[in-house]
Length: 320
Length: 253
Image (cartoon, rainbow over all chains, first blue to last red):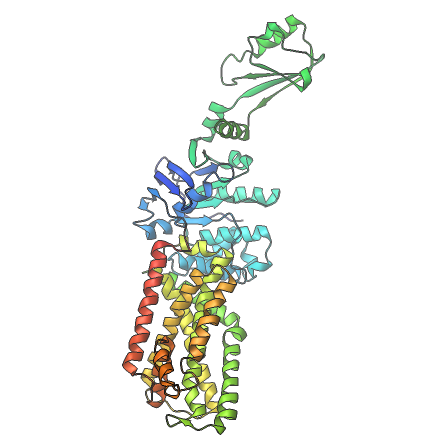
């Protein structure tokens, strides 16, 4: 695959999407979003995480013009999405969660249609480049109904890129695709980011966000509970654990270990010590020495670091 | 004005027509030709004249209008309903297009198909019955105006419909009866006086009457009233579409 050819711009701190006081209350009274404040930086990959019904798609749909906000404002590349909707929408590409395609159309005609719909003059060279970048060029004359699910997903991405947007929303881009294709998709997203496109993706696969995102936002019940640099988030909220499999099970934690953040697991056969890996003195050496003094032997030990998934589950369950 | 969007929608819709030529063009031409064979050449030969025009020739404008009304509504309603049904409407809603541009694209394509169909039926009719066109410019004007107006109505039906059944309700249950009772096959002067008055509430009467006048110079209602009624109906449809797009009725949450 060749690279994308948009002018490359480095990721910076300038805002490309600014969401202020955004609220959405549906006619049935359900409030899907509560006063969302969010800034997406130019050139970054921003992952929006949240359980089903958290408001991820509603937020994206408002920014893209599909759903009307009840209150608040959104600027896309400096353009208000309501007052200056033409300029704002021209900057945005959207790949929806569902595989909504024009079944009877060919790949080429549907991509050309999208370019025109977004107000861009026909440019066969551009459409060809997009299709080649997505490995769709050989299937350009194929009817969409004859393509596999993964290919259809690529067609949707091609349609979203046909008008050369600077902001790309990917709503669950790898939902229902196999592991190999998912990894291809991740490479594609990285190449897009490298070409200067700002990527905002929602996903259920925490592994995906951990792998790709520069920053993470967690939305829960319509409220944005965390927006943080991924590394910083994992540093701040991540924990490490030392797991010891004991020679002889313990009925209860010995009084001599009461000062340690310990848990007894697996019916007393495992001791789990949780500690802050970023502190200079973790206390692990002292703990192991203390075990020896108390005559508690272990047959095996290993350590683990909390994943983004652990952090996500922790954040969401705190507010459940 | 996003002319590229208008062009994209128009070409997309026209491509759909040419992909389904049998259904879009051939079938309506064939069914109308059958009317000419049965009512024009066969039964018409045994009937007298209506307003001084042979029966086979008399029904030509009415039958063209019948096809134009039905196909305009069908084309435009299906054109906008299909993306709603398949979910691809998201692209239209997220595109930098105004409702005027969407309307020009979809309604323009639907009206073009109807005009093409009308011309084909007109040519086909010549095979079966003789006719002349007294006011060609007015004939074209009524043809285009009717095609646009009923394509607008079809667009509204397509936006409103929540299922394929609802998509068919208005054309089958309302438009077809109005057209058959609107003077497609007879002059309203042939009706009893009370029914003549009731018939004047049928908007299709004005369309058929005006269109027939452009052929033979004979009409059931004044031609200016026909043109005015058609324009009023078109204005109502435009207002309805504008309201739908402004409020997002059945389109946006």
